[in-house]
Image 1 (spheres, rainbow, N blue to C red):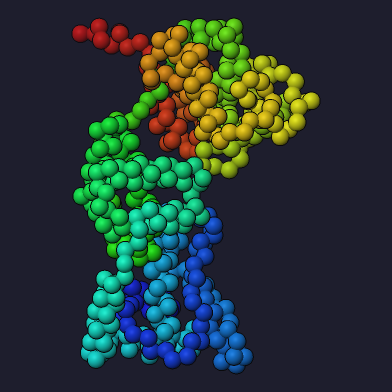
Image 2 (cartoon, rainbow, N blue to C red; image 1 turned 120 degrees about the vertical axis):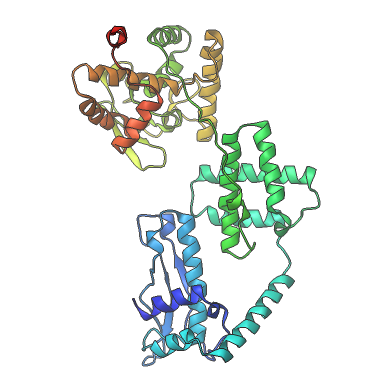
Length: 437
């Protein structure tokens, strides 16, 4: 282990992290964090420059990685690097020089008999605590805005909107029931628990847990940046919830709906066929442009959930229903409210909501379908059909291996879990076994 790594780890675990500044002349730049724009596949690190004794100029030092890249989430990595940065800055002030042997400094900090320095550190810690008490707490709305601003660099636009919506509802709730809470440090575990309980009563355990997760994510940023002392939401337990399930349509239901839509709303029917035959999600269908559909090569390019662009085969059953798109501008959206190939100024969520409401009005209400039947249910329906058809000529393993390439599941385990959840596999009639004495 390098001297720098030992110093950082030691500094993080001991009181010397808050030691006084031993440096007189600033020979270094403040350490900075490199987070690879939130890309967890790349290495994150801290970097700084130190003054070269020969040239007298600041020289970039080899980046320090430590153990940060073993963590799997952006929040964990950022939290570790923030700690590394704080400790490294203090070590630099204490005399750490990356171009010389720092053994003496390490021994000095690690030596148990340095009672004078320990007492100095204790006094400095007391001074820092006192100063922290004197610093006014940030306005609660300002604090959340700060957290959201940092989060924008780490999560998707959709996730930021989810955060904003939940924070907005929290602030409305506080304004009515706790108008005295004006600063972020006035917000405590008891109040947040009451808010989450209110969400639970009005909606569901699943939604309450989602609120807990999103608010905790933003609060963690505030803790990492010393705006609050502790992210207490992490200590609020997650409630057990019953997952939502989209029912699978029977063959008769599916055929009846398709025949009905062929007469009443052919555009909606084609939208649903992209879900049914290409196994896309409704929002993925909304993202499609004319240029994403290659009729000549029978392929489809789309942006999958939390993944880069993917390419799928367009089966002939869907290809036969597609009109000639060659004369249309490739940048036009494939689906709009009134035609194939057009402009549509709306967010992806708004587009999906349009077709969801349209499906309810045109299909769900006339067919008297309950809330468990959705457009997404057609994806389950046709994956079930395809899997059972494959089992007629192949073993379960062979069928699932072939199905993975079609559905886009990344692992066999994920596909098997999905098939179990939608009851895609049914055993053959076992009546003979039940009749045996």
